[in-house]
Image 1: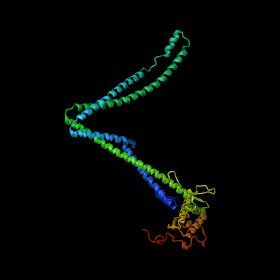
Image 2: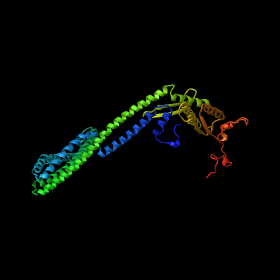
Image 3: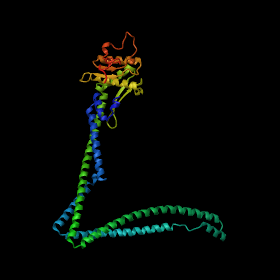
Image 4: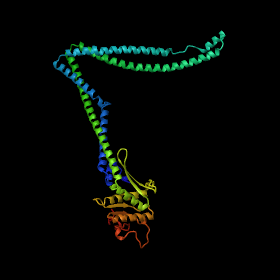
Length: 432
């Protein structure tokens, strides 16, 4: 009833305007929608930055700053080496890194690989030995030959024991298989790291044993290029993280502002609903009066905020007990509600600079004759108040009257349209 089907759009386009017509603070409603749009835009930008960072968060800023500082220091040292063309310090650092870092790590990984292989061998042995060699049938034959009583019972007990052991063995086998898979995965990682460290160790030994100064210069220059690339990457990440941190602060502020606006909207709605002298209260009374004068049922116009703080507008026809009915769901009564709403809004704004006319097409369609007469009386009543209701209808929709009692006086009819020539057209001119 409040939004034309041909004008479907975002609620932010029409709800603030409708709230203003009904006497609510439209600036609060408009501001709330604007803040929500801004909040959604900033959240979208923040998500884009998070995706670009590949899962890094603002908590990593300190780590990035620390890594960046170390990279910058390393780059400055290597630049000084290149400028001085003296690689003694570089040789010393390479030796220390080789002994303290790489060799120790290789030694630890080799020990770990040996331990894993031993455990894997034990598991495979256990999996191969998991057999039950006892044969109940052979035992029964031996008992019979020896003349032992209750041999059948003994065979049954042994079969149950074997079944029980097999169940335990199957569960143990599953655990052993899972443990072997974990060992295989860790061995794969250890072997890969050993290969990488071996290659790096070889490069360092080659560097230390080389007497070609230019080869060392080229190697240090390549390392400096890599460091600078890392520095550029870390600086970009740091800038993105600072931007994300700023966005989070803005999002928190906008969320808080939306909360304040929602509270203000709820307070305004409560104030306008409870104030009998408010414009909204007047529109509600006029709206119900029009509907009751036409169909002898009261109607209720209500406005309330939903959980998001957005206004929800509702118009309902009430029964004698004051409960909402489904009558307003029909096309005829929905049209009547629209007419009543338009007239009520215009009447509530009579003392202000506001449009004084309203146009409705087919006002009498589908109404019974008594309701047509009631609606016509309401329209004439509003015309007497100083408004200008404009209606269009076809003659078959007119309520029946005697020939000497026309529905409309000649001065009430602005134009009569027909198909008997150009004079029956709206603009008195031929079609093209």
